[in-house]
Image (cartoon, rainbow, N blue to C red; front, top):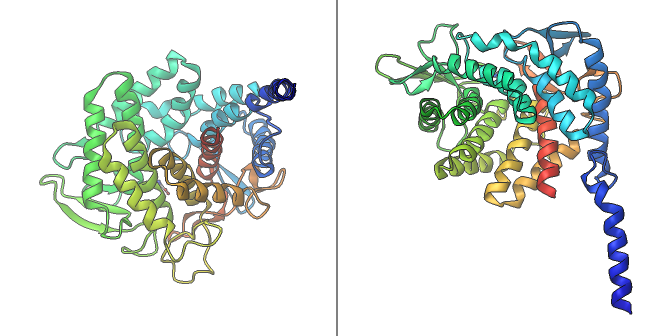
Amino acid sequence: MIKVKRFLISLLLFIFLFPFSLSPKNPMREKWLQKAITRSEVQLSAAIKQFNDSNKNPRTYENGKVILVSYKDWTSGFFPGSLWYLFELTGDKKFENAAKHFTTFVSNAQFRTNTHDLGFILNCSYGNGFRITQNPEYKTVLINGANSLIRRFNSKVGCIKSWDFGNWQYPVIIDNMMNLEFLMNVGKMTNNSLMMNAAISHSNKTMKNHFRSDFSCFHLVDYDSISGNVLHKQTVQGFSDNSSWARGQSWALYGFTMMYRETGKVEYLHQAEKIASFLLNHPRLPKDKIPYWDYDAPNIPNEPRDVSAATIMASALIELCSFSNNSEYFNTAALILKNLSSDKYLAKKGENGLFILKHSTGNYPAKSEIDVPLSYADYYFLEALQRYIKYKK
Ligand code: GLY
């Protein structure tokens, strides 16, 4: 009799709770998580109304003004990408429609051959769009874009060239690891081994030349384009050539975790684990795990934070945990996300230029975008929230 009673109670509980566990507005979710998603909905709902006709996407909010950017800017794909993630997080069609609309704003990037940032621009927008909708028009844009990007690969150097400006011969920045996901994605989609091999070659060269013995990394390595030899290692956005620029370290962690997912090559997993160990054990990583803009900035703790470095790191750590099963990775990511969902970092309704998170740093040495919101901090925040929910299931 007791057994039958227990069974009936379990059945009733299951029937009652099952629909909620699948629902985007899940009352079983932690309070901070629901708050973060609801606030994101509020901010981005207002943003899509405000910027609907701009043909540009929001990048940051500085000196009381939202800066909108065209497909020529490396950050232009993040706002549509955030809308795709928010659609997945909420199931609200309004965000899907908006994602479609704002994605088209970056379509012209597909034929650009003068930048390595096509992964950021097109994979976050069209890539997520194609993953979710399977729209064949999106696929065409992705293929065109990857064909443009691969033209920047030099087999002698074994890397994709990052920048066409400056006095370098063949500059490769650590950020460039992020664009490899685009090549892997389209390479698999079209069975193009040239693209996949270029991504692998770039990763191998980066692993060899960008890292120091403690697994921190330089921002920029300049190569001789004829011999392929390293000419010079330095920073551009960090405190000094030998310092650890926070976002660069996060790009590295994310990049090698992603390349392990894409290739199954265990050396990338080990690289990601060593980078994680450097970051998580760093004496100047604050208690709340939101990094200062550079781990070696001279006036820590009186230095600006970089929330974008935190969201990229959180998203990468959740993925890394799914491969390494090291609970420290997940727990740190969870702490970051929880802290970012507090009023210290999460924007209030209508403030912060309608971005979700405050307190990022774009380019400190150039005195640009210091302690501001950034579209990519929001993008990786939403990605990390989604990964957190999936991982916890
Ligand atoms: N990719 C440019 C930056 O991280 O600022």
